[in-house]
Length: 221
Image (cartoon, rainbow, N blue to C red; front, top):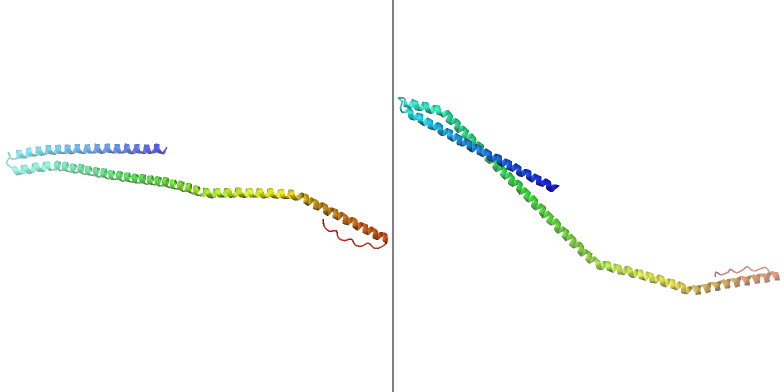
């Protein structure tokens, strides 16, 4: 969409410049044609003036005749001269406008060139920065890989040690189970024997009429 808009603007600018150029050429042609007409009109008046002045020499009052002829042609010749100056002033103004327009066009072109160069430089710098960032990240990943691998190995080793310790503890508990069972049964039998012995003594004391002795505390199994 932006590309199409840019093309449209470029086309419009080119058309405007073409139209302005054509108008300028037409104005220049018209001014030149008018100057030729003024020159022709001046030449015609001057030729008539010269003819009339020549005729004055055939009269008695030559000076009066010459003065009268000169006075009669002075106004139209002055008008032609003023018009000529006006046309030439217009041409100078038109040329100055064209010169200013060319300078402005060149200034705008210079601005566009600078902006384009700045965009290209920025794009190039951005591309170089992206490449530098990618290269830096690649190196960081490569540098981090040994440490990551070492941490992974250490983690696996720790997991293996924990698993081995758990298996060893389980095996130890399984190996100790018979002994612990035997001790528990011995303690149970010893406690049972103490209770039976105590009960016999108490029965004997009751049979003999002696007060029963306080039972000794039963040790824990």
